[in-house]
Image (cartoon, rainbow, N blue to C red):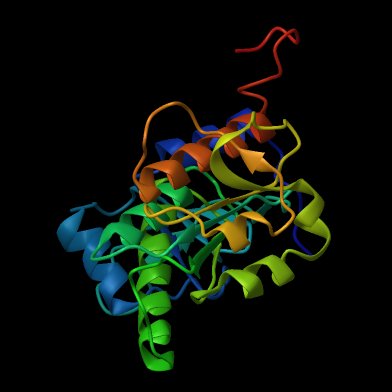
Length: 255
């Protein structure tokens, strides 16, 4: 059984922030690092023997390590106990209409950095991108690699769930009990409720009338016309800020 990390949240955050790198491993006891990650630590980041590196299993468990001197065997040596970051009490979801070219990769990267827990690319009536079954699998594999790299860069020890692109109806059904705290981004809607957990962002062509009648309350993201990926990032930022307490309701002494 993992022992609780002795330090408080701020100290744990400082350990993560000041490490020279974070790398994901399958086993925090074995600390096996892939050849690509070993190459990245030594030859790309040019870390030296003894430098601090955090290893995480991507499910909230992590430990401080140091870079070892071995080249072909064990790359990391443990330097502290296993810490456990509990899952969030209120997971956050952003679903965004799949866009062209590399814009979805940018969206997933930034939502990962913001701490969004579930990232759902969706296909709507006006989505330009259309994917066959094989292309959906290739696309989600690419997006998950982007999320992995972004999580390592931002020192995030719990990886987000990046779902395979699905139709809007499937995404709405998958919300389950979270549907009561879900919003549809649309000009003319209301403000972000502090306890919201999910925002769905449509394509740049907008939602179809039938999609607007899905039963979710509407969320206004401001007076300007935003690209789909910008709207997704703004929605994710608001969700994250309310959950963390960085932003609070007017009258509570917050922003």
